Length: 107
Length: 423
Image (cartoon, rainbow over all chains, first blue to last red; front, side, top):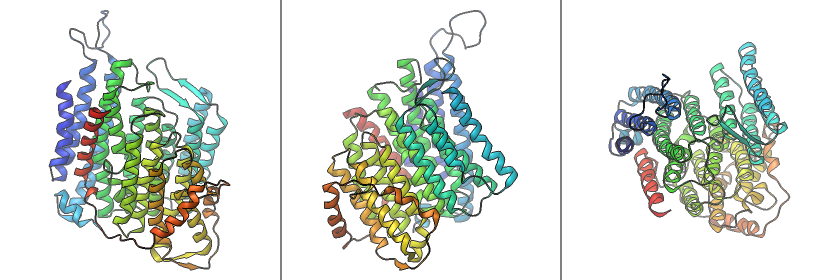
């Protein structure tokens, strides 16, 4: 669970400290995967089985694992949309540095 | 209630299929149909499929929010001439997504709706392949995604404590900190979400009107549901509102001035106990002002439109006899009054420069009339004089470094730490 929180923070700090837009998007994805890991980690309890019914009663909690699939799909859709935007942007401006892009797109 | 929801779902599918057949959409009628369906239905709670199902709740505030969003969409639908199939489908599905946010009472469901709304907004925005639009959309997606990750942390904390994703009556410190920070980054308040300035100002006029008028409702409402009426962050939101209104002076671009006014009003909405009337007022006024931004840019505007623009600005500032005065009156905060005045002064300073033109009255411009409300408050009269005074000498040529993505995320992290430490 701590590893998941650390991943989210690493992703957020990656957005703050990296200037390359591709690396920024990768950092966002790291953060997103961190939140997925958090959902999976919290539903696990020591000694429990995967939530597949085989007659035994101790299972990991299936609810967070079930709902987080939606977050994975959404994360992927946002990642692909962002990458397509970046590729258009880099093609137009010929820059990958976020400060340069910010300067070139100002009024 | 369940039958009502099923009817609503069927209604939502009909216009999309009609559009495929007719090409010219029935979209103009559609917001009215959705609005009517919500108004006819009963208020109350419903839990779909057992304890772990989605919890829906519809109150009177949800109805006013739906009404406001419907009016905003209707104004845009009446104005927009050329519809492509993709635009119309995004337009229709986004109404549904926002309306669903107003009845959702489930943290994970709200997360999904927020993310879907952001993808829809992104897809709508990048129709215009301009560098500014692409970059502002990217900033919106980056900051929003980090916000969404933080929001999910808060959600799982709530699930661990209560065993359900339904919004609990009282949030503990950590879950409140993560959920609020995540939502505020997605919302676009000053500091945490200054992407709003470039995003709302760079896209087409119709989209700016939709984003500022309707889309912000999809985030204001859940924040209110999660935090409840009495929360500790009221003063924080009021201060953010003041800072947001000061950004008005950072640009000469009319749309950017309007966007910064949205930023101020967004924070103001979060700080008052019941934001439904405030949101209605803001949605109608801001949609109208954004739709007229083409005329403002040219510097000529027809006489009826000037009067309607003045009504909109007055209502945003909370002048007497307007809906804005009624909405603002529930909070007796001098900070809110100041922020709405300052942001309206910025818009008024642009209006004062345009030339009036004798022109006809269009039916699509009629909506700001609903903002004139028979209500009087003394402080609003006082504000009339102060707004006139403030518009005389305003320097608006400073550039803001705060629009950068890095600052938004950094502010988000600082805000998160602050809430955890001090609340």
